[in-house]
Image 1 (cartoon, rainbow, N blue to C red):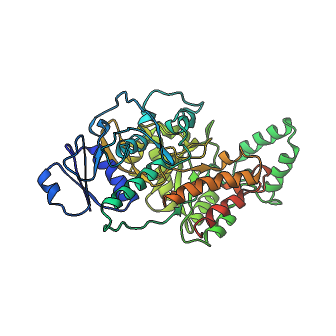
Image 2 (tube, rainbow, N blue to C red):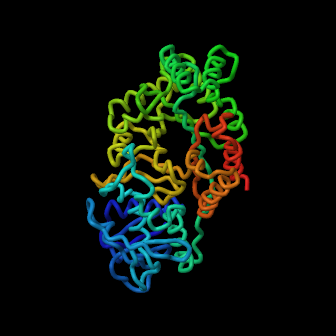
Image 3 (cartoon, rainbow, N blue to C red):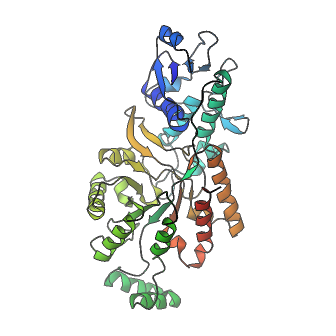
Length: 432
């Protein structure tokens, strides 16, 4: 156990130390404000305060972990060996930066509470982030800092054995609509017909009716492939089904259709199933509550995981609503248009509510790449290269890699050519 001496035990301090020490490094941590207790502890220990007590392992503390609410913090990002960091703390400290303060800033999403420009969907964008502006978006900096901390501790406590952690993956498959043409109803099918006709999309028109009359396979129906891939691996795929109402943004299938219910139940026999919450449920807790209840009726168990439509988050409300509804995990934390680490993390972390200054039970599982992002690379070789860069970063810190693909990604649609190979590359990364 690591004992930390500090002048004040705050909720922020406990939150970030437990993430770095316990969740990333696998070491239990405790805190004390009593010098006598600290001196009596004869194994792994450190002080985290303004002044070093003697010659102990010491990291000079930044004020952010002892504050409440938001303040106007000056962030000065600097190079640090093979990465970047901020909150420089001088030469006397065992590390040149206060990694705990910096990690708290990243994990709490402090910057997302501050005034910023959002995109047309009201989302916080990668280009507004500290990571993008200072060139560390492609690194899981929080995990990298944690391992730098570990190496510094090991040099002072060589007899202490840290537990080992292995690289792992959690493939996410998003299902905004399980079918391109099936189960859409008469009015939507007619609407699609007229659109295809007047836009001269005659191939789409032919395919629509070939599918509806059972002559062709629906292009979005790739679930047999998904199940076959799942059967070959011990770890579970996580599939998010949309079951909300039809709207301008969400155009899924009515959950009252028996065939759709049967599909979800069938997938739940092989994979983990979560809720793809609708676009408008981000701000409407009653709508979210209804969708959660409907999904639980289908899967006949408590809902564990959710993911907001369009990867949209309004912090802290979106996460507060999940906490209130006792959803345990969220997979929305990431960027649609950029690969990388939105919270600087590839180890799941608990949501810290900056307004209430409290750690919540909601586990935030950030995703690091979405299939759409890889489309910006024209060749399959470039797509593989971009994917391997992210995978190698996660492997370097024994983290959890979370890619987001869609059911139609595995179709024969030309846009998604080669994406099955990319998915297989991800699955095979655990074998190396």
